[in-house]
Length: 385
Image 1 (cartoon, rainbow, N blue to C red):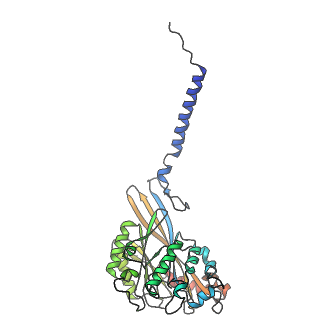
Image 2: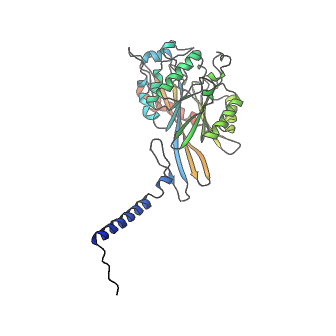
């Protein structure tokens, strides 16, 4: 007859502890199962993608654009407090508005060459570097620098502007330091959606581009634009084109603008933000030959300047939603919900320049502000209805 073996009590305790640990680890793994696979990392952790029963994830962002940052001499003189140039107060009333989009671009119309190159206004602009500080403070994420004033201070102006923008970490596109810089795509990644920003201008007010230095500014050329759009499509989910075109003070786009917009859309541009006319021109969808749709706003008008009357003191911010669908079958991009937020530039005899929401401009002295707001909204959305 075999003897019964009695396990020491200490051994029983150890076995129990080991078993309990194994069970706890399995429970934790079960609870965490799928989290790391299904949560798409975001830059600012504002949102997480949704996962439906068909294993499709979505990421959604809103991209916005504002028009001309055109700093006339009276504007930078108003920003000087006796010690330094401070432009933040001019944008304080729209800061909450500008912070709404996940990404915001602006057309930096006047050259930001800084004090060393000598400040100047119309017709050859050179503005304080501090303008860029105010844009960053207000929520701007990238600026377009290709326009008819890009060469107002020559190559020195472009170098000074680029150096300061790089110093404060504000991306810029449209003017470049050399050929290699020009080839470097400007792509911003927000919530897993990669946006490529391109920028071109019709010309530089007759100032010739130095021989052998075509890289200094992107001039409108269909072949060059086509090549860059195709290159950007390979690396980004969305291609945004900022373009300086049209006729000044004309509220409806020209045939040439419409034709070029159609060309850019069919080559792959997804969003087109226009500038140069200094007044607002409408938004619309362009249906492309391959079944996509491209959003275009033909002119964003002046956002901050000393121009007034005849709609030159009314600008605004355009936004559009971008949704990226990720599934086992592949990814797709959807554009929706175009919105325009009109703004107004107020001042008191060229002092206290302020950008304010147009719907609130009555409190800042604009007569019939409500009627003007409705008129502008109707003008901007007339081709969307």
